[in-house]
Length: 65
Image (cartoon, rainbow, N blue to C red; front, side):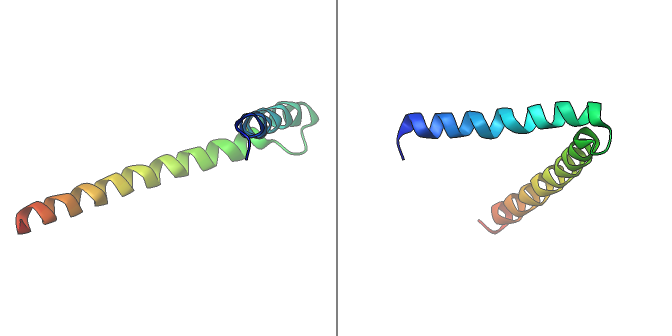
């Protein structure tokens, strides 16, 4: 893919959902901000758990080595 096409596609994929979420707040039927916040909190939780497991595995590999 062309680098400019990649940059343009990336910008579209970042900007369009933000605009849709902003306008969904006014319509009131689909509030994307609440759903996005729940997903973000869940992702943060699993990232912390994943880092914990990674550190445990690194510690076990250091004990063996």
